[in-house]
Image 1 (tube, rainbow, N blue to C red):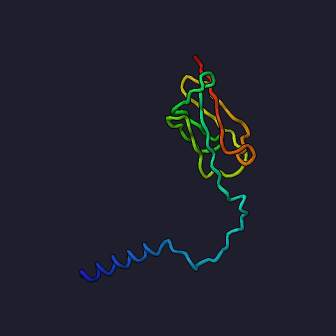
Image 2: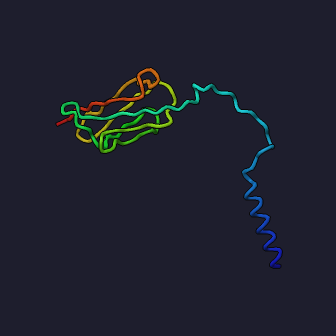
Image 3: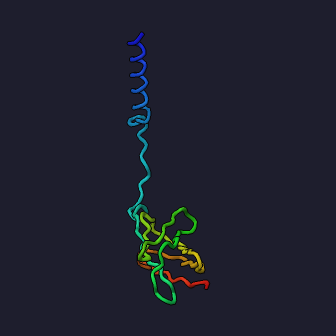
Length: 122
């Protein structure tokens, strides 16, 4: 009886290990994509106060229409990685500052560094 239980456990373990292995089942080829379509870009930037030029820490910077968002570090710097080429609306929001939106930012044409200046509501 003990050998039967061990054999069933071993059989179960082997089936779990090979369950996700679908090599050789279907040799479908993925459509070819050009290097431009797959090239990932990096967008960097800095958020500062419009009047004082002081770097703003903890500002939420987001790419509209996506779930991509980051927060600025102690120097007001942010970084988006693995962004596909194209035009983006980038927004910055922070407590006691007006929301700022940079529309149609294209890192391939405009460069990959973006400076956002925010106005205080006070």
